[in-house]
Length: 413
Image (tube, rainbow, N blue to C red):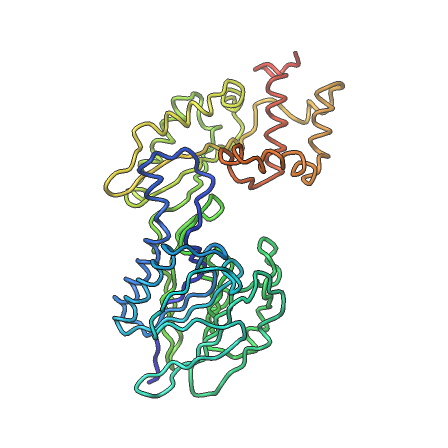
């Protein structure tokens, strides 16, 4: 029976900086800085343990067009480990590390195949017989807007056909539309597996044939939450097998807490501590952003009395790096509602009504323009969290103004 097994990973982004979790303790900062390297090492460990035939690396091996000697050496050492275990590797460059970048040339193992700028098919052989064709290409420059999918074609009907494509599924608006394709176009090619890259969130677009985004191998900011890693894949004459394996050891989380259920800051502190001490945070590194929701009188206290910062600093006490990892609350997001009624305030005349009108009609583009000098400032931007939701920032600004203008009973001053 025909059979081939491999690992599929993408978007290594080696040397990519962590953003959004500022002022980490030194020991935690050192741990997270090396996390992508450890995730890569865990992928290679898994490949050797599972005795796969090869490993696919689908684009954005490095985070920029400049690749440091250190980062290249890390990748080289891991590819050598595969080579010594008799495992082939197939690698493509994406929009972040396109072929027109600058880097020092290294000698890679003969078992490592780097794709050129044109779509090509490379045979994988077992006992001199071709059992699979690996199709792929590397980005010649950062911007590849052509429909590269049109150049992918089956080579024969006897061998497995595996496509490596670092590109954007049409309709995905959160990412740049590089090398765009539709799901229908992939299916029409009649390949046995599509190894995708570029989207940092894991997604299984189709079960058979498997069409898979594995996500990136290590989350680098708060939007890249959840488990990161690679897929183990087995193709045979039976149904394909795909299994996700977590290889990252630093994970971003956003637990939700309804503060409307609590009457005091002590109760809120205790429930947050209980979450931080949960069993699923017992090993590895965990970066926590608590999201406070609900309608509560605590909302005004947290916002007006600056107790949000006090609460965060209290939760951070005695939470340095330990032997088995860390749990670090890096942010508290106040998305709850104050106890006063917004709709009734809109019926009032004067300044309060003006604030609510401006808030309802403020364009997000105007906000971006207003705060762009702050985010472009060399020093200030280092202390800022990435802007995830402009509408939420407008809401928080509104609530801050209203909190200063309204007493705790909700009466206008």
